[in-house]
Length: 215
Image (cartoon, rainbow, N blue to C red; front, side):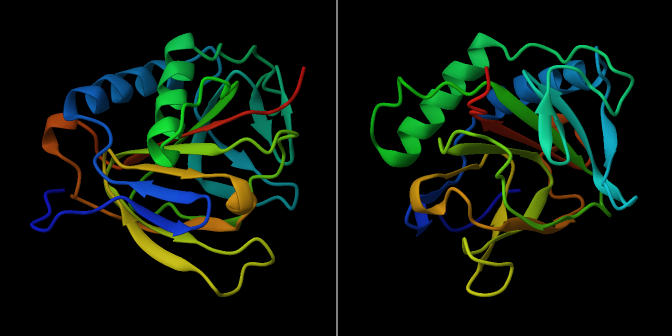
């Protein structure tokens, strides 16, 4: 979505950094194509069912490790038991560049080994939650593609205030680590029709990279 005013890089709270327009349109197209390939298998994209029986409105496919509430597995134990797709080396490189650009320091030791690719249609949301199933406290890298979303980034103690609401547009980078690594966060809504038509994407894709700390 084109904006008239510049959107500066912003540290929302210590350790949580928003870098607008980090991905070029060509890079976004490449990532959309990769996401379509990953969504097709070997483990296909699915809506995760929670232990209470509820089903997430977001659809997810994983790389490197398969995420289930509230653990990781090398096989898709809740989706047919297939072997999860490998985490590609080029995505590791992209993750390192993201952390380096967000924090302004080299990130050669950042080695993400799991990614969740989430697809949001116009009705999908993500409730306030912590990313705490990893054993490593390394930063989480989030890349947005397609429709703009309203993203809420909160505190590390609970789902209540203080929080910050912001719009994440296609191509935006958001990194959270350090004192904000375990902050509650969620997606309140997506805004239909805000994606660049050049992407050929209806809805929103979100790629989040993590370091699991698992062997």
